[in-house]
Length: 164
Image: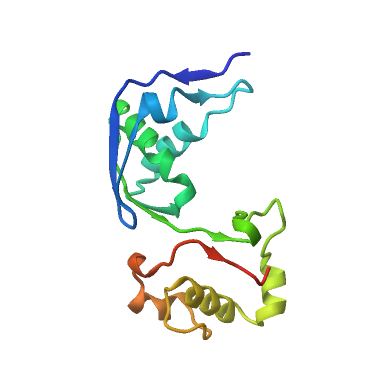
């Protein structure tokens, strides 16, 4: 069975990202036509996330920078479907050795392993917040305690995690 693709125009779509600033992409040149429905009948990621976010009333999206290039495609779909545009903020990735992206598939940083290493959820949260720049130290903290100093602007670039 065929996959259904959306033919895109030679049009540049821009987004003002809360962390990275202006990002723009020419749909025809930079991404090309993209899948709306896969050959197995499942809906493609771009369409699914746009419709799902709109149905749930999502107005702010924070996700990894690896998905920044998907945003112009999603904005284009939102325009076609007359759906609202959330505010987007893409953040640097935590990576393993040699800039390998952390993933569940590779069994990276399971919560059980982190609890054994750090002893408590607060210690994990505080450590991560400190190494990525969201907290001044790596001392244990709750998310609520970190709210007063939270700013996307404080995030460092790619952060290599050595404790996985």
